Length: 125
Image (cartoon, rainbow, N blue to C red; front, side, top):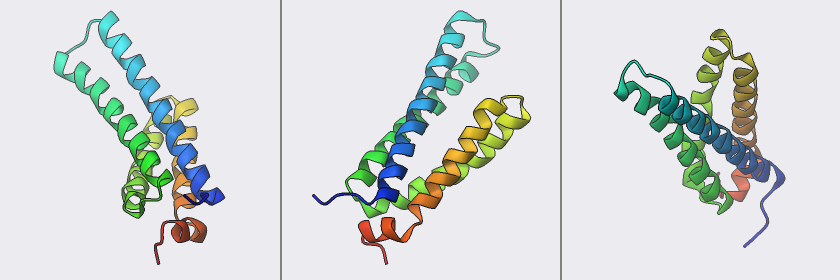
């Protein structure tokens, strides 16, 4: 197994960090759902399930990119770009301390996944 180039290694690390952060948010939402009265049970469950599934997906994509599977690059970039508007609405909603790092991490990961060194490591022309 060959060593990963620095941009791909950094992208994988950022994907793991995002997965951990979103997983922590899912745990926090689960805690609030269990300790506070929810307007609807379905809404409370979906608020926990969506970020938990996203965290698992980001972690899984990080593992597949670390194993230099080229097909994982496209879905990773797509998910990163979907995190940008989520970060924006966090900022608008008063959680700039969460939204700004989300946008920065998403754009940085996207940029790292688009570098020539990453493309070469994944054998993408």
